[in-house]
Image 1 (cartoon, rainbow, N blue to C red):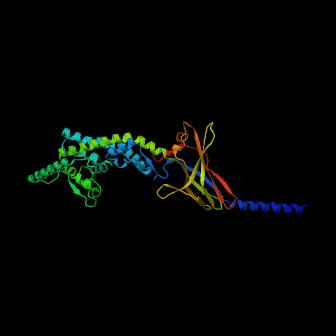
Image 2 (image 1 turned 90 degrees about the vertical axis):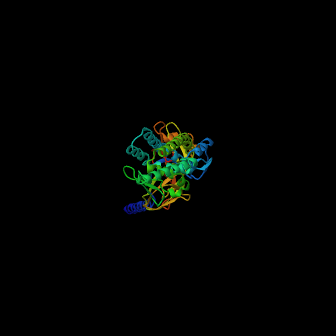
Image 3 (image 1 turned 90 degrees about the horizontal axis):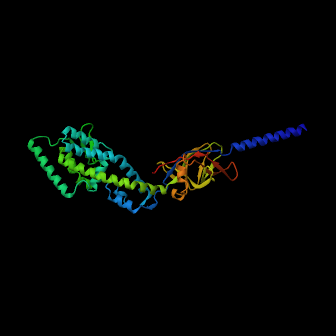
Length: 378
């Protein structure tokens, strides 16, 4: 009997050791969601822009490049960003530009006028907007350019006759890109960066440069009043177009979970390309959304991993799972997924893996997480 017990004990011990070794040799996957977002995926798709919006944008100086009736989603995204940028930076710039006109009308002395000029010229949007406006021939008509040229000739002659240096504001050409540096109070200001790349602007802006150089009030007033008018018109266009552009973009957003994935086991695991978002809310059945595995690219984007992903033993990686359908195809969910406080909603990702350590496929589940995603696009 003792022999039988000893043999049985040894057999059990051996089986336990074998089971333990086999268990150690399995893949052990650990999935942690890092963020939930709404993002464009495959933004080369062509979409139709509402005709009223396309018409509005085509009338703009700053936004005219986005006035196509049919455009790629990536261009719509750029239009949304440009409208938002214009609204954010354009309003203070318009006020500063208008203040230059006020300072001239008020009869401020040269020191005060130079200080007023320095304010808009130092703003981030000024140079970019000036170049676009000049390239669109919005700063001066042909007749005005001829008149400005004659005025500059008169000013230069007056300076020469007076025997004084031909400038009240030092101006230095920057030969590398065609821009000009002006010696206004404070640090020097560079205007018209990369002017050599803008052939139309090269013809439109000399009068503006000379107005600054000579601190000529009539020419300055003319230029800054025109700039204020263009800015005001474009701000109105941006305000009207932005809501519709944002809504169009939102229709094509995908729900995305970025995830940390680690394999703490001793065997590699193949992560399958398909998965599911599971969404649960109070008193409602759990809803499934098919999703696809994606890898993160070097530029921060995401790209489908059509054949899955091999995760070596001991390795970890950051991946993403992306819904196959766009937001417009799941009308009941976006608000719930965005606003967990008003409509409590939890989400987790489930996917399958294959490993040499077990037969068939094995499900992997992230933990349930409150869904309050932000949008990377709108």
